[in-house]
Amino acid sequence: MEKYGLYINGEWVNSTSGETFESINPATEEVIGIFQKGNKEDVKSAVEAAESAFEKWSSAPPPVRGEILFKATEILKTEKERLGKLVTTEMGKVIAEGLGDVQEAIDIFEYMAGEGRRLLGHTSTSELHDKFSMTVRRPVGIAGLITPWNFPIAIPAWKLSAALICGNTVVLKPASDTPLCAVELVKILERAGLPKGVINMVTGSGEEAGTEIATNNRIRVLSFTGSKDAGEFVLKNAGIKRVGLELGSKNPVIIMDDADIKLAVDGCIWGGFGTTGQRCTAASRVIVHKNVKEKFEKIFVERAEALTLGNGIESSTNVGPLINEKAVEKSQKYVDIGNKEGARILCGGEKAKIDGRGFFYKPTVFTDVKPDMKIAQDEIFGPVVSILEASSLEEAIKICNSVEYGLSSAIYTNNIRNAFKAIEKIDTGITYINASTIGAEVHLPFGGVKSTGNGTREAGIEGINEFTDTKTVYFDYSGRLQRAQIDVE
Image (cartoon, rainbow, N blue to C red):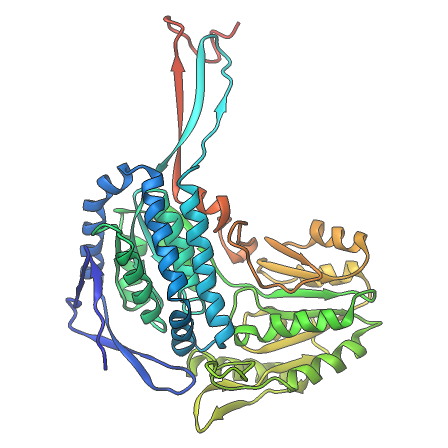
């Protein structure tokens, strides 16, 4: 079994802890690699390497940094098939989604490489004579990146590409369930010519390595994607540094009585059971107008029951495994809660094994769900969808907003007023019209409101904003002392 190292200052090294852990294929429960259990001392070494590399990397012209990202883009393209299979093997999502995970990395590296030709500030008039004003972008410093397992190449790529093009150096801690995907991404950046120390990677636990990254005061910007509880810990303990949080959600789809029901079913199947419900944008609440609820339920349940559960590497599989046994138990716990709360189960609700192995759970649909039930409030992060009834758009929007989260939302309607009211009134960072709640594009901002995060956005220009400081510059060519707000004529 291959053993992998930490990546510090351009070298693959063992942890000072002397301890390791395994990564497991969730479909077969087979070990696919052995990884270093990095600790605080390893993170400190990674920070020192990043600090030493910062001056040279941040001084490189941004288009030069962009050339390395373009090279990484080309390598990702040639390696897409292999990496897509690796995503499926290590994380479990079906092969089409594994390939999509890699394509998202290709897209974001290409986009951010192009930003090396921009990194735009702005110019402005001055209130005084013979004075010129502008802003420029500066790198923040060392970036700490803590990434989740559900998009094991795409999300690290989102954060890495933006941090690197802006001139920051990086300490990355990937999720312990999917470290091999991160190892392969780092190797690609190494092949693309990234200098030693610019990127450093420490695998290991969140309690040890993650906490040190979050609290180390030499790390000046921290980008974290994970659970709400972990995000709260990060925010409370990070100290005075820039912190970007991308946390959970409980995303709603509204289906009005004028909707295209077949299209809505397509979107809810994809949103509810794509990635086995393990997306922060998963459509776990479907709010259906009472006039079409029975029709929608019939078609939706038929489609859910027809989904093929299995190893994601098989092209016939529609729904792969959950990430681990703990995730299976969590889904079962919420199914039990839903039954006790009085919701009615229409299909699924059972654990499963394929050939006696794997962390599988059957696609599950509840109906007669009330907005205050725990299955309608808590993020389950599994293949469990709740159907709620509404008698009007206003009631549907009220149900949408009744949870603590606010990442993504969707409405299916052919009425333009309904669409614009949803855009105006639903408290989420993303709203789709006649499309599911999942499917971000890399040139547009991604993020949410309320307990979904702390107001930051990733991707697009917002990714650049996350990893740069804005410096304001004044040129006074009047040849005399001028005092703003005092010497205004």
